[in-house]
Amino acid sequence: MARISFTTMGTPAKDGFEAIAAAKEYGYEGVDLRVHHVKGEIQVDSSDEHIADLRKCAEDNNIGLPSLLCYNKTGSTEEGAWDAMYDDICHHMEIGQKIGAEGIRIFGGPLMDYTTPEAYIEEMAKVLQRVIDNDGSDTRIVLQNHGGSYTFAQGIELTKLTDRPRFGMCFSPDHCKLMKEDWDYALANAKQYSLQMYCSDVKWNDDGSHTGILPGEGDVDLAAAFQAIGGADFPGWVSFKWEKIWQDHLPEPEVALPHFIKYYNERMLA
Image (cartoon, rainbow, N blue to C red; front, side):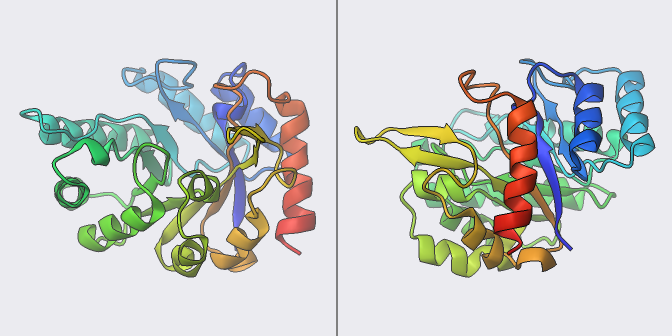
């Protein structure tokens, strides 16, 4: 049964404890915390005590932690870059395990700037295999398809090469649209390769630019994407991605969080 959460990109004025309280208040089952130096609820050097306090707060409120949003080092042609990526992902995995998260969300990096995208994907698959094979937990890793990095189709190729059940995609339909991917291909493969889904809507402007907007008011068919991964029977998390942290003009979480609950129940589950 699909479970819903929100990423704390939508609640930048709240700390981790307040975000967990908001999840409970608005009827969410989980919250995706961030590990970042800019308004992150956790830092890469956060104390074990702080992490333990956040874990206890989530457990006391029966709020799940689907994935930590991690802004990890990425691969490049520079000497030692892939080893640095491996070490950084391992460190974030340790944080995820301490806080009791089901997984971590990682960034892929600028594969188009590498010798070839295919070579980048091969090297990153080796890194992910090392991380998972040397990690004794059941913590999962998800990669978000994202503008400037992996398309969903490239993420599928990475998943195939990595060939580990604990790695898969965090399906972001909005970025499929932003990167002008084959929408039918993405929907046809989303169920097989997705461990999590990010829900975010955008509206195209007359000049070709786009603007973040409340789900259901833009040009991304989130309901179709949700049904493509299995709808209510999807066994993973469906996370509302509201990027107010980067776009201050967006409505406040007190508007956006209940809006997504209503949209999810009335449109996505329909």
